[in-house]
Image 1 (tube, rainbow, N blue to C red):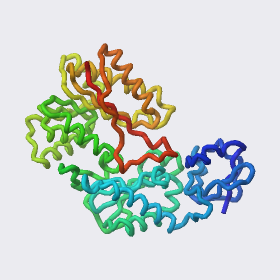
Image 2: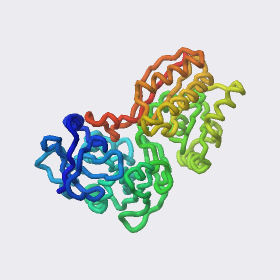
Image 3: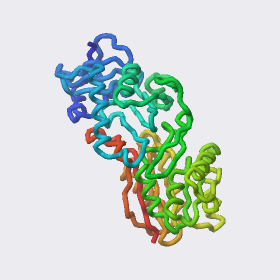
Image 4: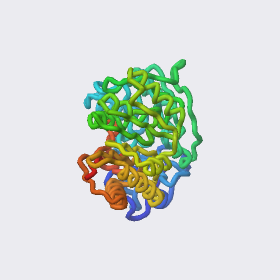
Length: 395
Protein backbone atom coordinates (compact mmCIF):
# COMPACT_ATOMS: atom_id res chain seq x y z
CA UNK A 1 0.00 0.00 0.00
CA UNK A 2 1.27 3.49 -0.86
CA UNK A 3 2.00 5.87 1.97
CA UNK A 4 1.22 9.55 2.43
CA UNK A 5 3.70 11.24 4.76
CA UNK A 6 2.82 14.53 6.45
CA UNK A 7 5.02 17.53 7.12
CA UNK A 8 6.21 18.02 10.71
CA UNK A 9 3.40 19.23 12.99
CA UNK A 10 0.65 18.73 10.40
CA UNK A 11 -0.83 15.67 12.10
CA UNK A 12 -2.70 17.65 14.79
CA UNK A 13 -6.06 17.68 13.01
CA UNK A 14 -5.87 13.93 12.40
CA UNK A 15 -5.16 13.31 16.08
CA UNK A 16 -8.46 15.14 16.69
CA UNK A 17 -10.08 12.71 14.21
CA UNK A 18 -10.79 15.31 11.52
CA UNK A 19 -10.87 13.30 8.27
CA UNK A 20 -9.44 15.83 5.79
CA UNK A 21 -5.77 16.08 4.76
CA UNK A 22 -5.03 19.17 2.69
CA UNK A 23 -2.33 19.22 0.01
CA UNK A 24 -0.26 21.73 1.97
CA UNK A 25 0.10 19.26 4.83
CA UNK A 26 1.63 16.55 2.63
CA UNK A 27 5.40 16.14 2.54
CA UNK A 28 5.58 13.25 0.10
CA UNK A 29 3.78 10.20 -1.23
CA UNK A 30 5.56 6.89 -1.62
CA UNK A 31 4.40 4.52 -4.32
CA UNK A 32 2.07 5.47 -7.16
CA UNK A 33 -1.48 5.51 -5.78
CA UNK A 34 -4.32 5.91 -8.25
CA UNK A 35 -7.23 8.33 -7.65
CA UNK A 36 -9.42 6.97 -4.87
CA UNK A 37 -6.98 4.24 -3.87
CA UNK A 38 -6.45 3.64 -0.15
CA UNK A 39 -3.14 4.90 1.26
CA UNK A 40 -1.51 4.66 4.67
CA UNK A 41 -1.09 8.01 6.42
CA UNK A 42 1.92 8.63 8.65
CA UNK A 43 3.39 11.64 10.43
CA UNK A 44 6.89 12.98 9.81
CA UNK A 45 8.33 10.54 12.37
CA UNK A 46 6.69 7.58 10.67
CA UNK A 47 3.92 7.06 13.22
CA UNK A 48 0.77 5.51 11.74
CA UNK A 49 -2.27 7.84 11.66
CA UNK A 50 -4.91 6.28 9.45
CA UNK A 51 -5.99 4.89 6.10
CA UNK A 52 -7.38 7.35 3.59
CA UNK A 53 -8.70 7.70 0.05
CA UNK A 54 -6.11 9.47 -2.13
CA UNK A 55 -7.17 12.30 -4.43
CA UNK A 56 -4.23 13.68 -6.46
CA UNK A 57 -6.20 16.57 -8.01
CA UNK A 58 -8.14 17.94 -5.05
CA UNK A 59 -6.87 20.46 -2.52
CA UNK A 60 -8.17 17.92 -0.02
CA UNK A 61 -5.48 15.44 -0.94
CA UNK A 62 -6.86 12.57 1.12
CA UNK A 63 -9.93 11.74 3.23
CA UNK A 64 -9.54 9.31 6.09
CA UNK A 65 -11.63 6.15 6.04
CA UNK A 66 -10.40 4.80 9.38
CA UNK A 67 -8.22 5.79 12.32
CA UNK A 68 -8.11 2.17 13.54
CA UNK A 69 -4.87 0.36 12.60
CA UNK A 70 -6.68 -2.98 12.89
CA UNK A 71 -9.36 -2.00 10.38
CA UNK A 72 -8.92 -2.90 6.71
CA UNK A 73 -10.68 -0.84 4.05
CA UNK A 74 -12.58 -3.46 2.05
CA UNK A 75 -16.14 -4.48 1.26
CA UNK A 76 -16.75 -5.62 4.85
CA UNK A 77 -15.59 -2.22 6.10
CA UNK A 78 -18.19 -0.44 3.98
CA UNK A 79 -20.86 -2.98 4.93
CA UNK A 80 -20.29 -2.20 8.62
CA UNK A 81 -20.30 1.56 8.06
CA UNK A 82 -23.52 1.48 6.04
CA UNK A 83 -25.23 -0.79 8.55
CA UNK A 84 -24.23 1.52 11.41
CA UNK A 85 -25.69 4.51 9.57
CA UNK A 86 -28.94 2.62 8.95
CA UNK A 87 -29.14 1.55 12.59
CA UNK A 88 -28.82 5.14 13.77
CA UNK A 89 -31.71 6.23 11.51
CA UNK A 90 -33.86 3.34 12.72
CA UNK A 91 -33.13 4.20 16.35
CA UNK A 92 -34.20 7.81 15.71
CA UNK A 93 -37.67 6.67 14.58
CA UNK A 94 -37.53 8.67 11.36
CA UNK A 95 -39.70 6.20 9.45
CA UNK A 96 -42.67 7.43 11.48
CA UNK A 97 -42.21 10.91 10.05
CA UNK A 98 -41.52 10.14 6.39
CA UNK A 99 -40.69 7.51 3.79
CA UNK A 100 -37.99 9.84 2.45
CA UNK A 101 -34.85 9.81 4.61
CA UNK A 102 -31.13 10.46 4.25
CA UNK A 103 -29.47 7.13 5.00
CA UNK A 104 -25.80 8.13 4.69
CA UNK A 105 -24.48 11.63 5.33
CA UNK A 106 -20.89 11.52 4.10
CA UNK A 107 -18.18 12.48 6.62
CA UNK A 108 -20.64 12.64 9.51
CA UNK A 109 -21.35 8.91 9.03
CA UNK A 110 -17.68 8.07 8.56
CA UNK A 111 -17.99 7.75 4.77
CA UNK A 112 -16.48 10.90 3.22
CA UNK A 113 -18.16 11.88 -0.04
CA UNK A 114 -21.00 9.34 0.10
CA UNK A 115 -24.58 10.65 0.19
CA UNK A 116 -27.54 8.27 0.03
CA UNK A 117 -31.18 9.37 0.19
CA UNK A 118 -34.11 6.98 0.24
CA UNK A 119 -37.38 7.89 -1.50
CA UNK A 120 -39.77 5.03 -0.87
CA UNK A 121 -38.20 1.97 -2.46
CA UNK A 122 -35.62 3.92 -4.50
CA UNK A 123 -32.19 5.08 -3.39
CA UNK A 124 -30.62 8.22 -4.83
CA UNK A 125 -26.84 8.05 -4.65
CA UNK A 126 -24.22 10.80 -4.83
CA UNK A 127 -20.53 9.92 -5.10
CA UNK A 128 -18.69 13.19 -4.48
CA UNK A 129 -15.07 12.13 -4.00
CA UNK A 130 -12.40 10.06 -5.70
CA UNK A 131 -12.55 7.54 -2.87
CA UNK A 132 -16.26 6.89 -3.33
CA UNK A 133 -15.79 6.74 -7.09
CA UNK A 134 -13.14 4.06 -6.61
CA UNK A 135 -15.58 1.92 -4.60
CA UNK A 136 -18.65 2.75 -6.72
CA UNK A 137 -19.74 -0.75 -7.69
CA UNK A 138 -19.09 -2.20 -4.23
CA UNK A 139 -21.07 0.58 -2.57
CA UNK A 140 -24.01 0.11 -4.94
CA UNK A 141 -24.16 -3.64 -4.27
CA UNK A 142 -23.92 -3.15 -0.50
CA UNK A 143 -26.63 -0.50 -0.45
CA UNK A 144 -29.09 -2.82 -2.18
CA UNK A 145 -28.09 -5.63 0.14
CA UNK A 146 -28.48 -3.59 3.32
CA UNK A 147 -31.63 -1.59 2.46
CA UNK A 148 -33.73 -3.96 0.34
CA UNK A 149 -34.41 -1.11 -2.09
CA UNK A 150 -35.54 -1.97 -5.60
CA UNK A 151 -33.33 0.49 -7.51
CA UNK A 152 -30.50 3.00 -7.22
CA UNK A 153 -30.45 6.20 -9.25
CA UNK A 154 -27.12 8.01 -9.37
CA UNK A 155 -27.03 11.81 -9.07
CA UNK A 156 -23.28 12.36 -9.09
CA UNK A 157 -23.73 15.75 -10.75
CA UNK A 158 -22.70 18.12 -7.95
CA UNK A 159 -20.11 20.79 -8.80
CA UNK A 160 -17.70 19.51 -6.14
CA UNK A 161 -16.90 16.46 -8.28
CA UNK A 162 -14.93 18.72 -10.62
CA UNK A 163 -12.62 19.58 -7.71
CA UNK A 164 -11.83 15.87 -7.50
CA UNK A 165 -11.10 15.63 -11.21
CA UNK A 166 -14.37 13.77 -11.77
CA UNK A 167 -16.96 14.42 -14.44
CA UNK A 168 -20.68 14.57 -13.70
CA UNK A 169 -22.67 11.37 -14.06
CA UNK A 170 -26.36 10.58 -13.64
CA UNK A 171 -28.52 7.58 -14.45
CA UNK A 172 -29.92 4.30 -13.24
CA UNK A 173 -27.17 2.38 -11.43
CA UNK A 174 -29.12 -0.62 -10.13
CA UNK A 175 -32.59 -1.92 -10.98
CA UNK A 176 -34.47 -2.38 -14.24
CA UNK A 177 -36.41 0.88 -14.51
CA UNK A 178 -37.91 3.66 -12.40
CA UNK A 179 -40.45 6.44 -12.70
CA UNK A 180 -38.54 9.73 -12.33
CA UNK A 181 -41.40 11.31 -10.39
CA UNK A 182 -42.03 9.77 -7.00
CA UNK A 183 -44.67 10.61 -4.40
CA UNK A 184 -43.36 10.72 -0.85
CA UNK A 185 -45.23 11.23 2.43
CA UNK A 186 -43.97 13.53 5.17
CA UNK A 187 -45.94 14.01 8.39
CA UNK A 188 -49.05 12.98 6.45
CA UNK A 189 -48.51 15.45 3.59
CA UNK A 190 -47.72 14.28 0.07
CA UNK A 191 -45.00 15.64 -2.19
CA UNK A 192 -43.95 14.89 -5.75
CA UNK A 193 -40.18 14.51 -6.16
CA UNK A 194 -38.32 14.39 -9.45
CA UNK A 195 -35.19 12.43 -8.63
CA UNK A 196 -33.71 12.92 -12.11
CA UNK A 197 -33.82 16.72 -12.33
CA UNK A 198 -34.67 18.03 -8.85
CA UNK A 199 -32.24 20.05 -6.74
CA UNK A 200 -29.73 17.97 -4.75
CA UNK A 201 -31.29 14.48 -4.84
CA UNK A 202 -34.80 15.79 -5.54
CA UNK A 203 -36.06 17.22 -2.24
CA UNK A 204 -34.65 19.12 0.74
CA UNK A 205 -34.85 16.34 3.29
CA UNK A 206 -32.77 18.34 5.77
CA UNK A 207 -35.65 20.81 6.28
CA UNK A 208 -38.23 18.19 7.28
CA UNK A 209 -38.64 19.24 10.94
CA UNK A 210 -38.39 22.92 10.04
CA UNK A 211 -41.24 22.61 7.54
CA UNK A 212 -43.37 21.09 10.28
CA UNK A 213 -42.47 23.97 12.61
CA UNK A 214 -43.44 26.55 10.02
CA UNK A 215 -46.82 24.85 9.65
CA UNK A 216 -47.33 25.32 13.38
CA UNK A 217 -46.40 29.01 13.18
CA UNK A 218 -48.51 29.80 10.13
CA UNK A 219 -52.06 29.58 11.52
CA UNK A 220 -54.08 32.65 10.64
CA UNK A 221 -51.10 34.44 9.09
CA UNK A 222 -50.37 35.86 5.67
CA UNK A 223 -47.22 34.04 4.53
CA UNK A 224 -44.53 34.94 2.00
CA UNK A 225 -42.27 32.03 1.02
CA UNK A 226 -39.14 33.13 -0.87
CA UNK A 227 -36.97 30.70 -2.85
CA UNK A 228 -39.91 28.31 -2.45
CA UNK A 229 -38.65 25.59 -4.83
CA UNK A 230 -41.49 23.01 -5.07
CA UNK A 231 -43.46 24.56 -2.23
CA UNK A 232 -42.51 22.45 0.77
CA UNK A 233 -42.83 25.24 3.30
CA UNK A 234 -45.86 26.61 1.45
CA UNK A 235 -47.79 23.35 1.68
CA UNK A 236 -47.06 23.08 5.39
CA UNK A 237 -48.12 26.69 5.95
CA UNK A 238 -51.40 26.13 4.11
CA UNK A 239 -52.00 22.87 5.98
CA UNK A 240 -51.31 24.74 9.22
CA UNK A 241 -54.13 27.20 8.56
CA UNK A 242 -52.39 30.15 6.94
CA UNK A 243 -54.69 32.94 5.79
CA UNK A 244 -52.76 33.22 2.51
CA UNK A 245 -49.47 31.96 1.05
CA UNK A 246 -47.47 33.62 -1.74
CA UNK A 247 -44.59 31.46 -3.05
CA UNK A 248 -41.77 33.01 -5.10
CA UNK A 249 -39.11 31.24 -7.17
CA UNK A 250 -37.25 31.76 -10.44
CA UNK A 251 -37.98 28.25 -11.71
CA UNK A 252 -41.24 27.74 -13.58
CA UNK A 253 -40.75 23.96 -13.37
CA UNK A 254 -40.38 24.08 -9.59
CA UNK A 255 -43.46 26.28 -9.26
CA UNK A 256 -45.49 23.95 -11.46
CA UNK A 257 -44.52 21.02 -9.25
CA UNK A 258 -45.43 23.11 -6.21
CA UNK A 259 -48.92 23.66 -7.60
CA UNK A 260 -49.22 19.93 -8.24
CA UNK A 261 -48.23 19.34 -4.61
CA UNK A 262 -51.02 21.63 -3.49
CA UNK A 263 -53.52 19.72 -5.60
CA UNK A 264 -52.10 16.40 -4.39
CA UNK A 265 -52.97 17.45 -0.84
CA UNK A 266 -56.45 18.64 -1.79
CA UNK A 267 -55.71 22.26 -0.98
CA UNK A 268 -57.84 25.14 -2.16
CA UNK A 269 -56.05 27.42 -4.62
CA UNK A 270 -57.72 30.61 -3.43
CA UNK A 271 -55.18 31.14 -0.63
CA UNK A 272 -52.13 29.75 -2.49
CA UNK A 273 -50.46 31.99 -5.07
CA UNK A 274 -47.29 31.31 -7.06
CA UNK A 275 -44.98 33.93 -8.56
CA UNK A 276 -42.14 33.29 -11.00
CA UNK A 277 -39.62 36.03 -10.23
CA UNK A 278 -36.14 36.82 -8.97
CA UNK A 279 -36.54 37.09 -5.21
CA UNK A 280 -34.28 40.13 -4.83
CA UNK A 281 -36.27 42.00 -7.48
CA UNK A 282 -39.61 40.83 -6.11
CA UNK A 283 -38.81 41.94 -2.56
CA UNK A 284 -37.90 45.45 -3.75
CA UNK A 285 -41.10 45.62 -5.76
CA UNK A 286 -43.16 44.52 -2.75
CA UNK A 287 -41.44 47.22 -0.67
CA UNK A 288 -42.29 49.89 -3.24
CA UNK A 289 -45.91 48.66 -3.26
CA UNK A 290 -46.08 48.89 0.57
CA UNK A 291 -47.05 45.24 0.84
CA UNK A 292 -46.59 43.34 4.10
CA UNK A 293 -46.86 39.86 5.63
CA UNK A 294 -47.15 38.22 9.05
CA UNK A 295 -44.68 35.41 8.31
CA UNK A 296 -41.81 35.53 5.83
CA UNK A 297 -39.58 32.59 4.88
CA UNK A 298 -36.12 32.99 3.39
CA UNK A 299 -34.52 29.71 2.32
CA UNK A 300 -32.07 30.74 -0.41
CA UNK A 301 -29.68 28.49 -2.32
CA UNK A 302 -26.06 28.15 -1.26
CA UNK A 303 -24.57 31.66 -1.62
CA UNK A 304 -21.13 30.65 -0.25
CA UNK A 305 -20.04 27.03 -0.75
CA UNK A 306 -16.66 27.88 0.81
CA UNK A 307 -15.26 30.55 3.13
CA UNK A 308 -13.64 32.26 0.12
CA UNK A 309 -17.06 33.38 -1.09
CA UNK A 310 -18.26 34.47 2.36
CA UNK A 311 -17.86 38.22 1.87
CA UNK A 312 -19.90 38.32 -1.33
CA UNK A 313 -22.49 35.96 0.13
CA UNK A 314 -22.83 38.12 3.25
CA UNK A 315 -24.01 41.01 1.09
CA UNK A 316 -26.68 38.82 -0.48
CA UNK A 317 -27.91 37.48 2.86
CA UNK A 318 -27.98 40.96 4.34
CA UNK A 319 -29.93 42.37 1.39
CA UNK A 320 -32.75 39.81 1.45
CA UNK A 321 -33.06 39.90 5.24
CA UNK A 322 -33.13 43.71 5.30
CA UNK A 323 -35.93 43.75 2.74
CA UNK A 324 -37.80 41.01 4.59
CA UNK A 325 -37.68 42.98 7.84
CA UNK A 326 -39.19 45.97 6.04
CA UNK A 327 -42.00 43.81 4.63
CA UNK A 328 -42.78 42.21 7.98
CA UNK A 329 -45.69 43.53 10.02
CA UNK A 330 -45.11 44.45 13.69
CA UNK A 331 -45.11 41.24 15.71
CA UNK A 332 -44.50 39.27 12.52
CA UNK A 333 -42.18 36.29 12.22
CA UNK A 334 -39.11 35.97 9.98
CA UNK A 335 -37.79 32.43 9.44
CA UNK A 336 -34.44 32.80 7.72
CA UNK A 337 -31.86 30.20 6.69
CA UNK A 338 -28.36 29.81 5.34
CA UNK A 339 -27.14 26.49 3.93
CA UNK A 340 -23.74 27.93 2.96
CA UNK A 341 -20.79 26.03 4.36
CA UNK A 342 -18.71 29.21 4.20
CA UNK A 343 -21.04 31.05 6.59
CA UNK A 344 -20.99 29.72 10.15
CA UNK A 345 -23.80 30.23 12.66
CA UNK A 346 -22.16 33.15 14.45
CA UNK A 347 -21.50 35.02 11.21
CA UNK A 348 -25.02 34.37 9.95
CA UNK A 349 -26.51 35.83 13.13
CA UNK A 350 -24.29 38.91 12.75
CA UNK A 351 -25.44 39.36 9.15
CA UNK A 352 -29.11 39.15 10.11
CA UNK A 353 -28.53 41.56 13.03
CA UNK A 354 -26.90 44.03 10.65
CA UNK A 355 -29.85 43.67 8.27
CA UNK A 356 -32.29 44.50 11.08
CA UNK A 357 -30.20 47.53 12.03
CA UNK A 358 -30.22 48.83 8.45
CA UNK A 359 -33.97 48.22 8.24
CA UNK A 360 -34.46 50.23 11.43
CA UNK A 361 -36.27 47.46 13.28
CA UNK A 362 -35.93 45.60 16.56
CA UNK A 363 -36.16 41.82 16.52
CA UNK A 364 -35.66 38.90 18.88
CA UNK A 365 -34.43 35.40 18.17
CA UNK A 366 -37.00 33.01 19.60
CA UNK A 367 -35.72 29.75 18.07
CA UNK A 368 -32.63 28.31 16.42
CA UNK A 369 -33.17 25.78 13.63
CA UNK A 370 -30.81 23.30 12.02
CA UNK A 371 -30.75 20.20 9.82
CA UNK A 372 -32.69 17.07 10.74
CA UNK A 373 -31.32 14.06 12.64
CA UNK A 374 -30.77 12.10 9.43
CA UNK A 375 -28.19 14.81 8.58
CA UNK A 376 -26.05 14.37 11.73
CA UNK A 377 -22.92 16.34 12.58
CA UNK A 378 -19.83 14.45 13.72
CA UNK A 379 -18.14 16.03 16.75
CA UNK A 380 -14.88 15.73 14.83
CA UNK A 381 -16.25 17.33 11.65
CA UNK A 382 -17.91 20.68 12.49
CA UNK A 383 -18.15 21.50 8.78
CA UNK A 384 -21.10 19.10 8.76
CA UNK A 385 -23.25 21.73 10.51
CA UNK A 386 -24.09 23.58 7.30
CA UNK A 387 -27.78 24.51 7.81
CA UNK A 388 -28.40 27.49 10.07
CA UNK A 389 -31.88 28.87 10.78
CA UNK A 390 -33.28 31.66 12.93
CA UNK A 391 -36.88 32.31 13.93
CA UNK A 392 -37.19 36.01 14.72
CA UNK A 393 -40.07 38.15 15.96
CA UNK A 394 -40.20 41.77 14.83
CA UNK A 395 -40.80 44.31 17.56
